[in-house]
Amino acid sequence: MRHFGHLAPSVREALFHQEPVEFTSASPANLLAVALGATLYSPATRPHLARDVVKLADRGVVSMVLCLEDSIADAEVPAAEANLVRQLTALHEGGHDADAELPLLFVRVREAEQITRLTTRLGDAVRLLSGYVLPKFTEDRGMPFLEALARAESDCGRRLFAMPVLESPEVLHLETRAETLAGIARSVDKYRDRVLALRLGVTDFCSVYGLRRTPHITAYDVGLVATVIADVVNVLGRNDGTGCTVTGPVWEYFRFSERMFKPQLRSSPFRWRGADELRAELIEHDMDGLLREIQLDRANGLQGKTCIHPSHVAPVHALSVVTHEEFSDATDILRPERHGGGVLRSAYTNKMNEVKPHRAWAERTLLRAEVFGVAREGVDFVDLLAAGQHDHDHRGTEEDGTHA
Image 1 (cartoon, rainbow, N blue to C red):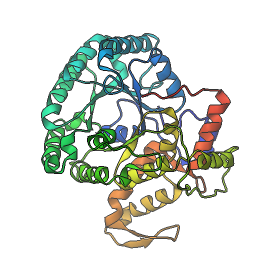
Image 2: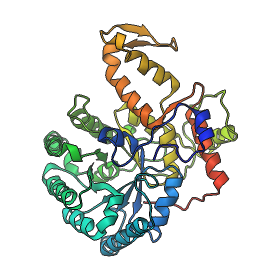
Image 3: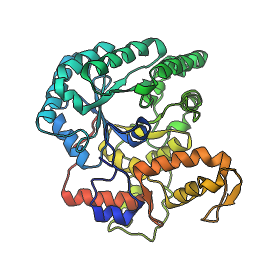
Image 4: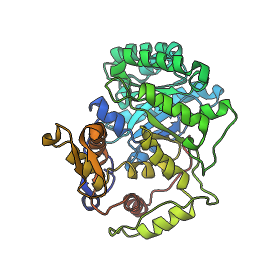
C-alpha cells in the first residue's frame, strides 16, 4: 500500500516531485508510525464492516481502528465481537491481502482478556490485524494489556503492535500528571518494540471538566488540553531515542457551520480541474478549525490524527505531504559536507538553516517525505485535495456517514 495510491499514476506524477513509497504491515515500525496518517475509527458493530474496509482503502484510507470500546454501548460488546470476527474472517476468506489491498487494521479493546480471546477466535484471519488499541492507558492499567499482547503475538506468530490511548484523568490532573507520565514511559520502554504510537484522548480530557470545543476552536485553544499535549510530548515524544510517535487528537465535527476565521489558502500556478471550486468550498463550509488543528499538531510534535469521519482523511493526508520548500531545506541541511555544522541560506532565499539545531527536524521531514511524498514546486495542499476529490467524483463513490 502507499499514500495517494488510489490516484492514477499520471495524476501522482503531476503532483509529486517525489512520490510516496510503498509499505506493508511488515515495514519498519518507525516508518509505519508515520504512515498511519489519518487513522479512521469505525464501530465494530457496523453490519457491512468488511465492505466498508475495502471501500475506504480505495478512497485512500491506510489505517483503521475497529472499535469495541467507547463507540458502542456496553450491552453491544458480545455482538460486536462476533461481528468483528465474522467480518474479518470474510475478508480473509475472500482473498484480501493485508499488505496490498487493506488498511493497517487495529482493534480497540476494553479489557486485556479481549486481546487473547479475539486473537484466538480470529484464527488465520488474524493475519489482517496489525495490532490493538489499548484504552485509558496508565502504567498499572496498561501492563496487563501489553502482557496479553505479547502472549497473543507469540501464540499467533504474527507481529502485533500496541497503540495505547492516553485519556485518563490521572494524565490530565496536575497533581498526578508527572508521576503518571513517568509510569507510562516505564511501561512503554519495557515493550518498546511493540508500541507503534501513543494516541491522545482529548475528548475524554475535556469531559473531566465538562468542556467541548466548537468547530472553530482547536485543541490548542483549550488551555487545559494544550498543557497536557505539551507535557505528553515533553516526556513521551522526545527525539533522543527514548520517545514514541504521538498522534494528533480527534476532530469531532464533520459538518461546518457559521464562519469565524478565513483559511489562508494561497493561490497556486498548478491547477487541477476543480481546485478553485474546492478552495471556495473550503471557505464556504468552514474547515478552518480542522485545517488549523492539523497544522498545530505538527508544530507541537504530533504525527497523523485520529479521525471519526472519512471526510477528514484527505485533509490530514494532503497537509502531511512535504512541500518542495521543506524538502529543499531538509536535504540541504543533511548533505554530508554539512555534518560539521554551520549556517546556510535556504535555496528559497527566505530563511537561514542552522545545520546542527535543524538536523533532527530535517531527518523527521525526510521520513515524512518518504511516506507521504514531496509535492512539486507550486503544488499546495488544495491541489492535492482537488486531485483526490476529482478522482473520488469520477468513480462515483458515495459518503455514507460518520464512522464512529
